[in-house]
Structure formats: C-alpha cells, structure tokens
Amino acid sequence: MDFENKNTENKNEVPSVDGQSMHQPEAQNTQPIPMEEQPQSWTETSAQQPSAQPQRPMETQSYATYQEWAAAEHKRTQKQEKRQARKDKAKGSRKPLMVVGSIACACALFAGGVALGGFMNGGNGGNSAPSTAFNANLPSVNISVPTNTVSTSNTGLSGEEIYAKVSPSVVSVQAVNLQDGKGGTGSGVIMSQDGYVITNHHVVTNETTGAPLDKITVVLADGTMRPAEIKGADKQTDLAVLKIDPNGIDIVPAEFGDSKSLQPGEAVFAIGSPGGLELANTITGGHISALNRDITIEDRVMSLIQTDAAINPGNSGGALINKYGQVIGITSAKLGISYFEGLGFAIPMDTAKPIVDELIQNGYVAGRPQIGISGRDVSMEKSQAFGVPQGVQIYGVDSRSNAAAAGVQVNDIIIGVNGKTITGMAEINKVKDGMKAGDKLTLRLYRLSTGKELTVSFALNDQHDLQGIDPQMQAQQQQQEQQQQQQRRRGYSDPFSFFFGW
Image 1: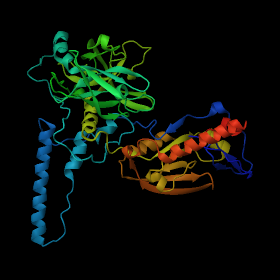
Image 2 (image 1 turned 30 degrees about the vertical axis):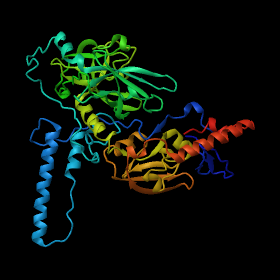
Image 3 (image 1 turned 60 degrees about the horizontal axis):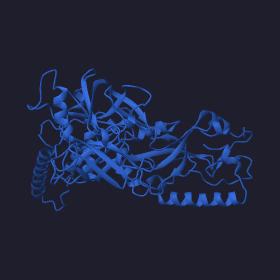
C-alpha cells in the first residue's frame, strides 16, 4: 500500500514512498534507487510455508468413527469432573470447579487445528488453538483401510471396477458470479450421505478477491442438479466444503484411503470433469510419480502427491484414487504446470481431512497465528545505501491487530523476532508458524522516524479475526486515491514514487 510522500528539509533524512522519513546518517549516499531494483513486496502470509509438520499422535485406543471418539472423550471428561468434585468436597473447598476444556483441545487435534502446518506454510506449525465446540451431529472424513468389498490383493481392482465404484461419488461443480456472469466449472467428491461435498477453494470463489461466487450448482454423475451452499472455504489449503440437499436423490459417498501408505510407482486413477460438463466424470490413469512434493503456488508451499494421471482444467476438486477404489487425494488443475505433460498434483487426503473437518465444524480453520502486517524485505544493498538495518520494512499494519495496539507502525523495520535476528519476511514467518494464536511474539524494531531501536511484545491474533479488509486501511486507501486524483488534475507528479518503493 502506498502513502503520500512528505518532503523534508532535514538533510539527514530521505523520503520514502510510504510517507515516512527514513533516518539517514550524515555523508551517506543519497542516490535514488532505480525502479527496476525494487524488491518484491510481501504480505505477512507470503512465502510462509515451511516443510510439512508431523501430526501429533492420536489416542492409543482406536474408534470406528469421529462421533464414537468424541462420545468417549466426553465420558472421560465427565469422570474427571466428578473425581475433582469429590476431591473439592472432601477438602471443604468452596471454589467453583474449573473445567479444563479437554474436549475442545482434543477436537482441535482431531479436526485439524494442529495439523495445518503439514500442508502449507502459514499453518500453525502443529500448535493450533482449540477450535469451537464440537458438534457430533456433523460428519467427518473417515479414512479407512480397504474393506471386504474391495480387492485386498496386490493388484487391486480393475479400472472398470474402480470407475463403477467411485464415479457415482464424483460430481461436477458449476460456480458463477451473477453480477458479471463470470465463473467456471470444477469437480467435487461426495463425502457423506447427508450431502457434504469436498472441492477446491478456487473453484467456488473469485480468484482475484477470494469472495464466494453467488450461484453454485452441483451436478451428480447421473445428471441430477442441486444448488449448493458453501459451508467453509480455505484459500491457504485450496479446499472448500459444499452442502447440497440430499432429499430425493441417490447420494453415494466416496470411500477415503490413507495417503501416507502410498508408494511411488503405485497405480492411481483420477475422475473429474476436464473441460466442463461435456466431459463430466472422465477417468484417467497413471502412477504415483512422487510423494511430498513441495510446490510453491502463489507464495504458498504445498506438500503434494505428484502423478502422471492426466489432470486438466475442470478436474479441480475431483478425486485421485488408489488401486482399491479409495479417494486418497483431491486433484487440482491449478497446481499443474501447463507446459509440461504428465505432471499433475493432488492434495493428500490425510492432509485434507483435518481441514475439511474443521471447515464443516466452524466454517473456517481456527488457530492460525497472524501478526497483522504487510512488509517488504530490505536488501543488503539498500541497507548499505540508506544506512538502515537489513530486515523487513512494514508498509501496512492492520488496525484490528494486537501489533497495532502494541505500537507497531508503518515504516518500522523488523530486525528481530523472539530474540532472533532476521533479514527477511521468510524468517519472520518461520518463527511465527511454530507458534499458535494467542502466543506472545516479541519484535525488535528500527524506527525510521527516530533512527532508534525498540522492542514490542503482543499476542498473535487468530488469522480468522483479521479476515477481510481493515476498515482503517480501506479509508486510508480511499483518501490516498482522492489525493492522487487531485494531484493529477493539478498536473503534479510525485518524483519519489519512481525511485523509492521499498
């Protein structure tokens, strides 16, 4: 975001495009920086995907369904409360019982609040905050071993058997913006008998703004059409969950398999709608080319399954299937590289499961830490040229964030995080992604307006609480646009806007 420049008569300061004066030591080189040397601008969420984080181990006792697990957890908590009540009564204590909240914490572990870092950077590094209260009436992705209804031999099912089993569970998804008629077609996978469907975030949202598209229609394999509601969408993992009315139609949920058990070279199939409804429920075949491929898409690093099964536009949100007819990945044409042949990618089902479960429970993924800033890396060259430390210059602070309340300002340069010296946004995100919302973060700042260092501490916000446009920043942008329009009408051109953009 750009701010109006303010010229200064102080010879020891250099104006910047962000509207603050940069403290400049005497006799320092004041040559303007050519426009082509400007570094790339980063938001807080850019380049913030570390390598996959392992999930915490689950309870040693196994459960057939999520509901059974939750019920058992509830009983265990009730027993703990009764024991605590007896202890307090025996001691004569009059203090009210404090419920520890183990159910909420455990639900976060199971439903995906903890496993976010395993898919993308910008997750919480396995330390997610508890999600909202668990609703046992809502469905959950059930990952199972091959059952007696499928072959347990090494060869698995034939292609014909796989198509007959899985195709009824794969749907086409049509999404459109009613205002301009723009939209597209993707695919989806039915996950439950009551009409929940998994697809990609980019299939059902505006790719530019991220806003949900107005009208979404799900077309079943038999041609039946149903309007769909977005129950939750997560851009960071490119996953979304839709809901259709199951009454009066034949719903066939998919069987989901363990993507961690896959091996390179193993046969897989993809079913989706490449090119739209005309080619709905097309099956393609291939092999697992590689596992845990870290692919950077729009500044997010995603750990994906690589396959040579053909995945084309329209396949997004469809199924990648193992030899037993189990869905082990959600395909996405957006992750492919168009000028290569036989190079497709899918989101592993074990990674997608916690995200999908939490989208169904909450409508969003809870617990991701957010600082609430946007910034640009200060390169070594610019650090030397302007006599300022290398780090990250802040050009936007969300007024709703704890960072703003703690006094973090636009044009501050972040030079340290939690006691560690940093030189770029990637290092900040690496520290942040090992934390969770509510954890205390300490920043060491260099303030351009004074040329002095200071330290501020604050609690990390939940990413969900800072979604949408910051009202204060929106007002500043509108004010700046008005000022620029006035300047253009007067024939004024800001000379520094071409040279100082960092």
